[in-house]
Image: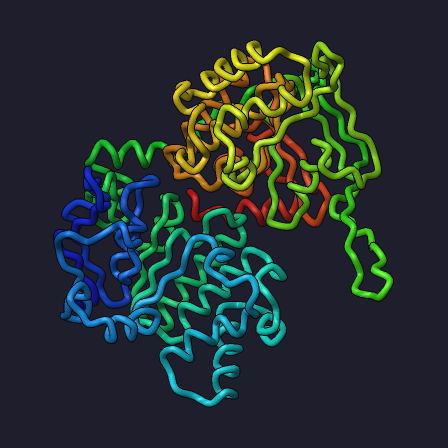
Amino acid sequence: MKNRKILEINELSIKVNGDNEQTLVDKLSLSLDEGEILGLVGESGSGKTMTSLSILGLLPEDIKVVAGSIIYNGKDLLKEKEERLREIKGGEIAMIFQEPMTSLNPVLRLGYQVEEMLRLHKKMTKEEYKSKTIEALQEVGLKNPEEIYCKYPHQISGGMRQRVVIAMAMIAKPKILIADEPTTALDISTQNKILSLLKEINIKHKTSIILISHDLAVVKSICKNVLVLKDGVNIEEGDIKSVFINPKNDYTKSLVKSSVLFNKDIKKIYDKNINNIIEIKELTVFYNETNKSIFHNKKKVKVVDKVSFNIKEGEVFGIVGESGCGKSTLAKAIVGLNNNIEGEINLKGDMYTEEGYIVRPQMVFQDPYSSLNPSKKVRWIIEESVRNKTKIKKTEREDLVRKTIKLVGLEEKYLSRYISQLSGGQRQRVAIATALILNPKLIILDEAVSSLDSTIQMQILELLKKLKEDLGLSYLFISHDLNVIKTICDRVAVMLNGKIREINNVKDIFENPQDEYTKKLLKTTEIHH
């Protein structure tokens, strides 16, 4: 027997108010059955999030629904009174946002924030509120929920924060859960656990779920049906198997193709005759942790433990591992952002400017919006390191900036813009330009494509490959995404708890792993096959 439809969107159109009235969603229709997990996929700007926000009446003030209907349990949400909408929001339809640090209040304890959803929709005693909240935290797989109840968001990991957000969404037992990019930027093991949790919620509570993601592998892992959006238009829809294996629309075909990253020919870059660009010997990296005693003694915490490896000229060397394994800490030590180290970091080859300044390896971070100065224009940002580190004249610096922006595939007009005026892919190109301008031989990319949708991700990877070939670069490529690692890297090191468990060429790591942890890590990525 076919399940009853719990949500129907009919001919929905959403526009930005203004002279041009830009259309964000154009005559979109979809339906969600009771107990169904529906995938909503598409690139950035395709209208996925705007569609979900319209369901809850959370669209920004300058964006309006101009046509269509959103039918929930037989009634149009667009015509419901505000009092009824308040009952529905969180109580019957809840949402999990992409970045829990922005959806959690940093100055309030986690227990209070989860409990607040219950206080808005249920009448209980103070003891019952706390008991139900601890129960909700436990249900999403958080150990020691009583301790989590008293903590602040910054005191727990990213995966734990995402579980707290899910607990907050589920505590009032909603009938529909909207999950907007709930696994983006999480390591592969944590991502897999969150997806398993969503599936468990779906089965246990019969909760209908709309899963929004740019990652087709994530959607494929738990969804029954999928809808593909482009520029606010429904391009293609159907069951997972028919859409992913036999897509009919050209755009869907390109989207599927861009997500299939297992097509790399393994290069013989690890040939012993090629010179090393950098050698790491017995490197141990520490952080200073301030004790809470009256004397504020600093305690050394070991994060990276006696790591050794080398990167060859022209090589892309990958490092993979779960969150907290020491990948980023290792990268920061190599570029000089953390000098609390023991061991050796030996740079090889021509690493100097004409003025004798040593050009350290440069770094491209995961989130360009937080790593680039939002108050300065792109021209200033790219030029900054040359202005500070060399004696090149202003006219020559300007020429170099124009040349560098072209190298990363952006027109000169973007030099006069602020970071906030660029798309995610454009921002990452600017971040790459800032790393390139001093002409380093080695660039470290720390989760540099993890927050981009699959099509933009592929474009950035292709750009990195071209730059490597044209400029003779070497890369240290850090990622939790083994699909990406297999696409671009020549050799890979697998890290766990600050130690390297295994180093080998990409083919052998993926086809014949030797270490038990590597085997376990590869097994958790089966959702990506």
